[in-house]
Image 1 (cartoon, rainbow, N blue to C red):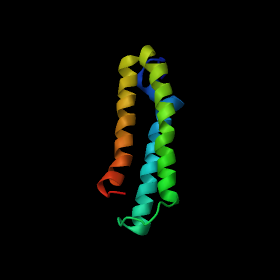
Image 2 (image 1 turned 60 degrees about the vertical axis):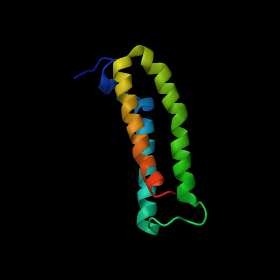
Image 3 (image 1 turned 60 degrees about the horizontal axis):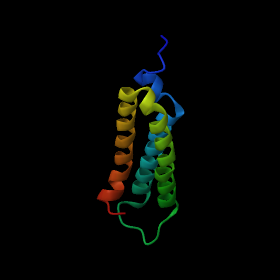
Image 4 (image 1 turned 30 degrees about the vertical axis):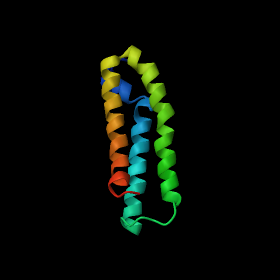
Length: 102
């Protein structure tokens, strides 16, 4: 079944649609691995996991901006849904860092 270029599925399948979500999931994975390996205790200094999380989270900003500029005018309803998913993924990746006060 072929989707038109303005459907939700076709918008979310674009690299600028799914890459920020994938980066958020990877950042959440980094946090979970850190929790499993070191527990929830605060570390004396930032390690590789913290830097990787920061890079993954900050790297999403230009992709999100590109997605918004490209897709909001073309398919506003569908792109707002994708942006909502992306924001939810960002919040899910940031929540453990906030709650554990890292």
